[in-house]
Amino acid sequence: MITIKIDPVTKRKAQAVAKKMGLSLSVLVKGYLAQVIRTKTAVFTDEIPNKYMIKALEESRKDVKEGFVSPSFKTAKEAIEWLKKPRKKYVNGLWR
Image 1 (cartoon, rainbow, N blue to C red):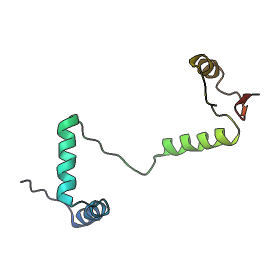
Image 2: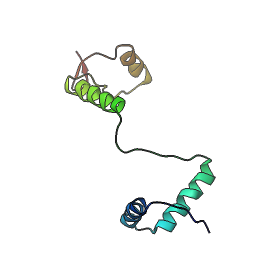
Image 3: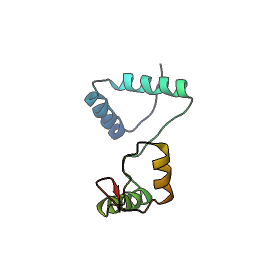
Image 4: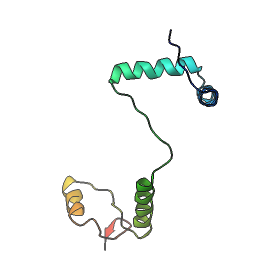
């Protein structure tokens, strides 16, 4: 048995998340602790992107809009050729 101190707001929010997943808060915590033991890592993620990620996403959207995207490749050689010229424009997978 573990007893932890946590503020009521955080507890209510965590219980709501667990409930949406069909779990109790106790099962959610047990599962997380089992994962920590199994992987020997503790993963904490933030769903809200930071400024760097927002900038990267904006650049990515701009590249897609302007046609600077990778087509699918049939061979590794084709992929390597594209990697040497990553700013080539593509229209329907054809080099331009």
